Length: 280
Ligand code: IPD
Ligand code: CA
Ligand code: CA
Image (cartoon, rainbow, N blue to C red):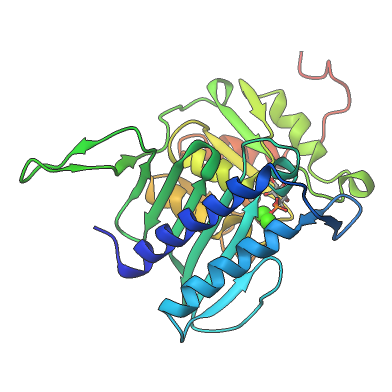
């Protein structure tokens, strides 16, 4: 059903997930990359595990990973060993392992695994997006076999007023206030806005229709590479915040079910509102 690369990413993401769960209850060694941007010894251990396991299988491939390894190469794995480190360090279950395969600049496989919920989201270019949540067995059309993989699709919500959106705030929001304007505008237009603290999970949740849209500035390739492919393969739309074509290197993303994309773009372009009564 999937390529050798994708099955390898799935196996390695599960292995890293087991490590994250087994170490979460032990004391964490925390250090800071910025005033609020924390990293734990588990981020580094998981990154090493993932890279070692993939390098063993694919010795010619390059790696771009958040913590320690930044290489160039035509075939490259893009890795976030823990997306949602702040959640992880606080004992919250919303953290994920994100692994993408980039071939000559294009993402061809995306895997987002949420170990605490045992949710494995997988997309392969041209093959759709799938979820194995360990609970559902889907009958295959032939041979009466059952598969753990359920095809997922974006939601059908067409009006921003009925949408549940989500976003994140950059680590330097104390100084820059970045994205607070957008958050205010969208809070006044959507049914609800959620901040879960893990971009990869928010993208996976747009892909399976739990969320209708996600936007965020100031992201890195490892935050969005796998998740953006999930949304595209699930029938959604992904652009930059002003509607330009998306690339996972651009540092921002607007991902929706497609139906509400234009409404979100328009809302994001609006001038900031002055008072909370301006819309009444
Ligand atoms: C962060 C999360 C968060 C987003 C930050 C990211 P990390 O990744 O995805 O939701 O708001 O911008 O850096 O640091 O937990 O891997
Ligand atoms: Ca991340
Ligand atoms: Ca991370």
